[in-house]
Length: 147
Image 1 (tube, rainbow, N blue to C red):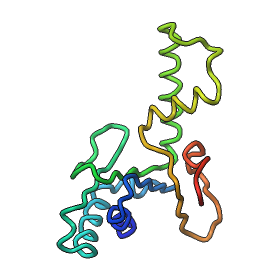
Image 2: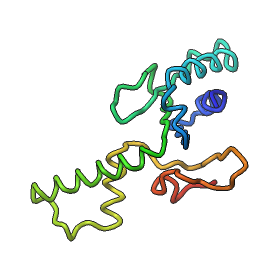
Image 3: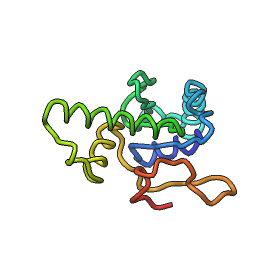
Image 4: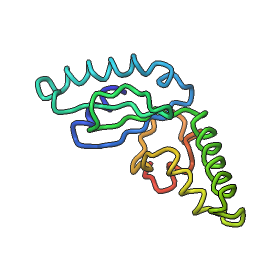
């Protein structure tokens, strides 16, 4: 996994999302960061100073080394949190009379979801494991994605 992130950085991929159904990577993101730095040194050698990675998270307290590549680790709870934030934002707009309840449609929800996570939809999904499924991956993140 860390090697994949490092190679993405090396070829200029700015945003990498990792979906972990069990939340293991999210609970151990400092260990993941250490492994990424180790793989970066091993795979890129002296070139590694050109590349840096940032962990993105909802609290904006992620470990930041530079902003060339951003890694977002996702788990099932993220989808629920994004929907709750989008609903809260919409309710706030209605309360401030900037929107009405009838303004809520698919496009509005899409805009609200995009604004809450601040991360682009993936262009490509690489799936590992024997099950041919994107089970649990946030559906609004993969609607235009190649799998």
